[in-house]
Length: 122
Image (cartoon, rainbow, N blue to C red; front, top):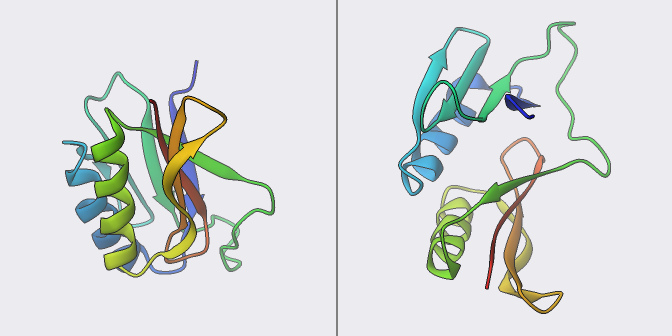
């Protein structure tokens, strides 16, 4: 179904360093690395997460109502992802915790304001 998800960035180097550190918690690595686009994943055939500078050369903006969800292995990984994101300069959108009975998750906005959720079924 999904091959990859892309969010915009206005600083590919800064955003790349942010996601390198964040995705190391999930043992993900850079799969594609181009001047205007970088993607991470666990292998090239699985879904990937990418950042890109907009091709129309206008500033990247976070979509209102847009959110990307990262599947974590367990609550400890949710906590680690959230803590690392905040340490790297992300802003809090909801600390780790149980929501909707068995849904353990946390929310943050990356350096460009993109809303990211990390979750597992608790």
